[in-house]
Length: 431
Ligand code: EPU
Image (cartoon, rainbow, N blue to C red; front, side, top):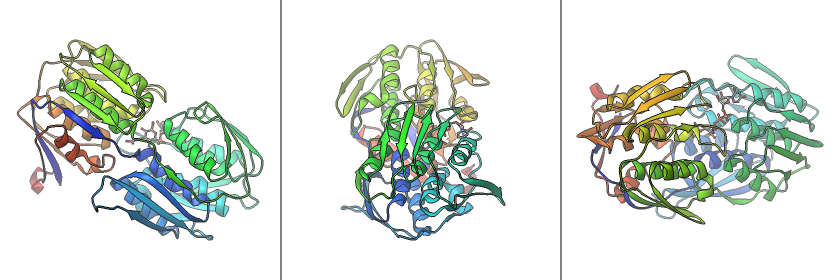
């Protein structure tokens, strides 16, 4: 099993550039299914999840090529050639490895009138339902059943526009319904829609493909279905979660980090929290700089759908709280299992008490290096950064999780001045 080892006492200083957002690029790849022909997505991060999504598309009959001028660039172009006649099944083997492959449900149903996608189940951050995806597609006239672990949807007469109220602004449900609605007959209105920048990005791509969408970035999306879409070239927006990881890393290590390739407006609340904690934050159009000279002051943080504080930055919020002066109340409102990784933070000496969706963290001057294990993408990155604030060596195991979402993690850490060692851990240490 791969592991990353860091020495405590390091300070993040320097510049990094973030690649395109994982959670945009994955959905943009699914959106390409909506138009036969060759679409190109640029600024795509070199991460495992993208490779799995490419495999999903290949099994549906697409040809997928990665254009990478130097063979190891953290950012690539993906060329997706979509056939007239697509396959209609995403099997369990792939969906198990990538929950986001459920994003093919809407586009395939819209294009083919039938789709069979394995039920993705939950994962290490909690149960993750599909009820809103299913209810919304049913409103649009789809007939949906569950059988042998598959979600089976059909719409023989085609999908038709409908008004859909989401119980919660689910990112995945908004995307699936949006991608179904662009080719449905008539007008669809999605109320209480997600407003994440990644939703705005997919709306921009769909609009360039010929879709008619109003209200991107607001709670109400109005989509007028069209008969067909055309392929496009589209660049994914920068990854706000990777950018936020470096911002919080700078704050925790009393560092000085400039992050490029990101609109700081995507991280408004997260950066504002850092100012409250004592950081100096400078923003420009597509970059920001975070400087910290003192021990952070504790801040309370509540995760919420965008524009609230992103749940994917929760491990960084806990890490910041763990080394801050004072106690912080951290509240998680999106995933029921997001605190699962705090046991690993506790191995580093972090003082954390959880109760339901709240965590009280009492900050300590220094953490204490230990072997720990990544449980998901964000927890993995959070543990490595926490290790920089610990005495001695911290070894983070199961770092294949980090590879799912951070294209250049080790190289970026090195660029920021950290001595970091990545290795295969002997089996007996792989727990
Ligand atoms: N939910 C339901 N029913 C549904 C849909 C969602 O109960 O039909 C619940 C989920 O169980 C969860 C909450 O609603 O508790 C939020 O789910 P949402 O659909 O908004 O999230 P998602 O689409 O599954 C995406 C990102 C996550 C990110 C969340 C929230 C992708 C591939 N994943 O997940 O990213 O945390 O939005 O912003 O876009 C990550 O990148 O590490 C990651 C987990």
